[in-house]
Length: 391
Figure 1 (cartoon, rainbow, N blue to C red):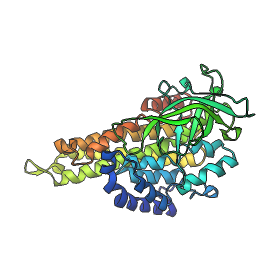
Figure 2 (cartoon, helix red, strand yellow; figure 1 turned 60 degrees about the vertical axis):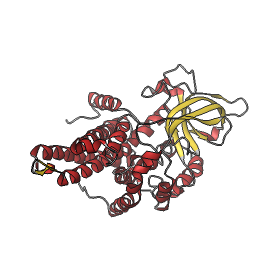
Figure 3 (cartoon, helix red, strand yellow; figure 1 turned 120 degrees about the vertical axis):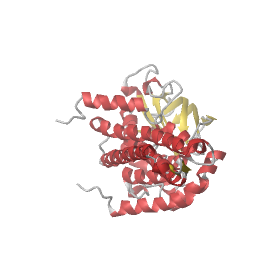
Figure 4 (spheres, rainbow, N blue to C red; figure 1 turned 180 degrees about the horizontal axis):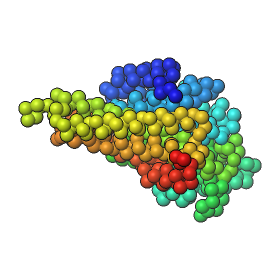
C-alpha cells in the first residue's frame, strides 16, 4: 500500500498550487464582490491544460482522471470555490457522455471542453425536484418529424454555469410525467444555439459568486436521436454521473477547510491577548488540532473515493465510500470556516479578511449534488445491505 502520489500527479498538484497562489488568490475577493464571471481565470486554467484533466487523451484531455481533477480542485478551493467550480464543470456535464455516450458524441463534445473552446452545464434539478429527482416534470416526447428524435419542454433550475455554457446535459421524462419508474428518465445533449433553448432568471446567491446559477428554459426543443445519451430510460446514468462526482465535490470541501484553517492559524499566531498570543492558549490549540485531524481524515476518504471512481467503481456497491467522502468533507468545510471566523473574532466577520467569504461559500457544498442528508441515507443503505461491512 503506497500513500504517495505518482510523480505525474505530484507535479500536477505542485503546478496547480502555484497557479492558485499566484492567480486565483489575488482575485478571490473581487470575484465574490463583483459576481462577474472570471474569464481571466478560465484563460489561466485553459493555458495550463487544466480543463481537460478528467477527459481521456484520445478526446483532447490529459487523462489525469478524477483523482487528477480532485487534486487540482483542492488547491484552487483553498482560495476560491467559484474558481474551483469552473474546474468541476469540466466533469459534471461531461460525465454522462464519458460513461454512456457514443463515440460520435464523445468526439463532438469532449475536445471542445478540454481545449477551452466550449463550456457545458448539467440540468437535473427542478424547482419541485431537487433531492427528489423522480419528481421532475421536464418532458420529452417522440418527434413525429424525426425518427428517434425527441421534443423537450420544461424548466431546469439551479444550473451552475448556465449562462456561459455552449451545451447542456439535460435529463427529462420520456414516459408519463407522473411516473416514478426509473426507466422513465433519459439523458440528452442539448445545444445552446438550438431553437427553443433559453437561459431564464439567474439566482442571487449567498456565496460561490462569479459562476452564475440559474434556469434553463426548454420550449419545443427538437433533439435528434444522435443526442440521446446512452439508452432511453437512463435514470441510472444520472445516478452514476453524480456518484462519480462525489470525490470532486469533496475536494472543494477539503480545499476550503485547508485554506480557512491555514489563514486562521497564521492570524492567531500573531494576535496578542492577555499578555500572550491567542495561539498560546490550550483551548485554541485543541480546536486547531481537531480541525486538522478532520482535514486529514477527509483527504484520505476523498483520495480513496477518487481512486475508486477512476476504476469505474461508482456503481451501487461503492456508493457508501463515495458518499462518505462527500458528506465528511463538505460538512467539514462548514465547521472549519465557522472555526476560522470564530478564531478571528469580530475581525473574522468583516470583509477585511477572507474568512467570511469561506463561511458563505461552505454551506453550498452540503447541498449541491446530493445533500448531506441524502449522503447519510446512502451510507446507511450501504451498511444495511452489507455493501459497507467489516466482517
